[in-house]
Image 1: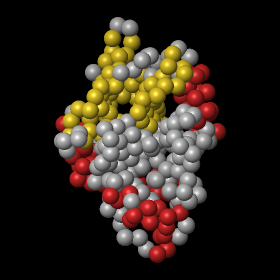
Image 2 (image 1 turned 90 degrees about the horizontal axis):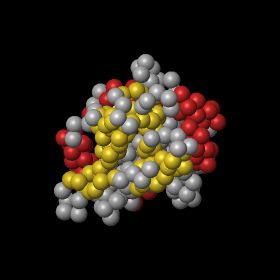
Image 3 (image 1 turned 180 degrees about the vertical axis):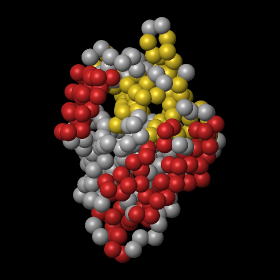
Image 4 (image 1 turned 180 degrees about the horizontal axis):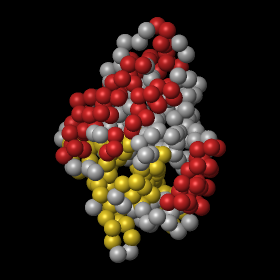
Length: 295
């Protein structure tokens, strides 16, 4: 059995004190939003308890679907790097960027500078997106949907080059006898998020999956535990959204949590079973429920 943990939207706090020049443009609006609203939604004590619970489940690999930071201040990248190091060795932890990580024009360079260790191929080199990591019975395919956008927008975009390479990778992996697990920050299907928050080339992502298939697709962004499906060539492909790993309030699907997926080789292929753990109404961290795939 191989155990994969899926978490997302950590939104590390507290926010470092920004300099005046740091708040020019989009960061100003994000900072106001953090001070007025977001900082009350994300609890670092809850996050630490979630991480402690994850480690107690003895995962073989942790997949983090982005939004480690809030407005992509330089000191936020430093703090987020320490957080990633606390999760485990880069060979056992993978990351894809979110829209908050790619908040401004300088962010892509900072993402590569600080976090490339968790976005490498099996060669140990960061070669851009998609990256592919082979582990046990699965192939993890990491995609980047985080791009700088204008104020009040949180859309994502893969782009033509990444989509082309993604199609080629999925087609090649199809015949390797591995469970193909795709990780991306934005919900990669039409209608997966509200206006201003969508993956703008979601229809093209869906077309790739319709031609190549996949066994499991993981995302974050919506701060809610969710299950959807995309049509594949041999049946429906489950698409799992993770809640924010630091959310301190909300309904059962919105509170801090994460997913566990167990991959088992059987005589007929690879069996995937899932469960959700997180912050319960009682305040404890525990089992929220199981994830049933209807393939």
